[in-house]
Amino acid sequence: MSKSNFSQSLLANSAKPQTAADKIPIIARRAVSDRAKEALNLVEKFVEEECIPADILYHSQLGEGEKRWATYPLVMDELKTKAKKLGLWNLFLPKNQFKEGAGFSNLEYGLMAEYMGKSRTASEACNCAAPDTGNMEVLAKYGNDAQKKQWLVPLLNGEIRSAFLMTEPDVASSDATNITLTMTRQGNDYVLNGSKWWSSGAGDPRCAIYIVMGKSDPYNRDTYKQQSVILVPAGTKGVTVERCLSVYGYDDAPHGHAQISFENVRVPASNLVLGEGRGFEIIQGRLGPGRIHHAMRSIGAAEKALEWMIARVNDPKKKTFGKKLSEHGVILEWIAKSRLEIDAARLIVLNAAMKIDDKDAKHALKEIAEAKVLVPQMALTVIDRAVQSYGGAGVCQDTPLANMWAQIRTLRIADGPDEVHLEQMGRNENKRSREIREKLERQREAGDRMVRQSGVKPVGKAKL
Image (tube, rainbow, N blue to C red; front, side, top):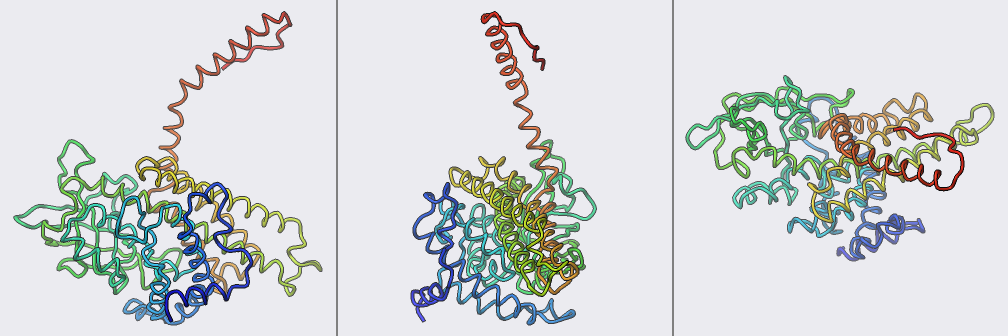
């Protein structure tokens, strides 16, 4: 079946009168191309009718025990084939910065990523899954031609997967200047020693390359130029995957979040990305888009949780005190609050995406931070309401809610803890203090003059 026939067939099978394009917030609609609207409709149908049903098969094919780390569910290959046929491949690379992507803006991809966030398999099926997305952006933006040919091309083709290694177990990695993995130049090589953890994706048998941040110039007076980023092929001598960490009991096989040790790991100096001392520049360029991608998918997770909650509270078999749960006022309040919070958070995310599109991520730091902090908190609140509506079923494996909550909770730590972003936002906002005080003082003085000129008796005097 051709792409055109397959696309038409998928769209025709939907009974919903309103398309995904129809649901685009009105303030963003004019910034979305007709081509992107068509792709958005396809993404919605692909996720709802192909990926979400396939999630069940994915978990069944994963199996049990240690063998889950040796392979991956074959349904993923089938979904990738379908996604490629639909043209839903590498959607994340923004057209104003990269030529390797599908030609969409951050805003357009944000709308698509929301739907992908409703499914375990959808992002990977469209080759839009973390950490590969951020790693591909690093290689596309900062890699040289040889690095792109060796690693970016197979990543773009979905032939391999990757991991990003920055966080360390023995230091407070929220301050990246603390990292201790050493990168010592010896001839034409760098020798790496140290330990990393929360290396997401390193458990996957398809993971072929690590993007590693280490300290190459520890005595540089500029602490932000002590670090470099280097490409380390998985399986390099001296690299040991010590264990895979669990997230609230979920080990996320086969993806995994690995703790990895480096003992005299020798890597060619040609594997250095961009240049020595450029590590901070690279990770900031990587983490900005990554934060917004997580926020985009989290909106979809919240929408899914709301759907599950509405289904539960309208189940005629689950009555309390003679009424369906939806007939109790507090439940309707939960539904209403969830809708308000999701819609408001979506606008925060789309605003950040549009700001990035207007220039780049560096000029949208405030907006990215707002989305990074607000959206996971919103999603956790909505998921928690859904869990509460299910009672005991909400905290066990019989619904996706417990796993969704665990995954979203990590986002308050990943890519920088909320507190770091809040402190920076608060510091920047507080820079307006002098301007604000001067403005309020001018307004007070102007008001006092108006009272004196009018001849009326003042009722009080405002003080700052």
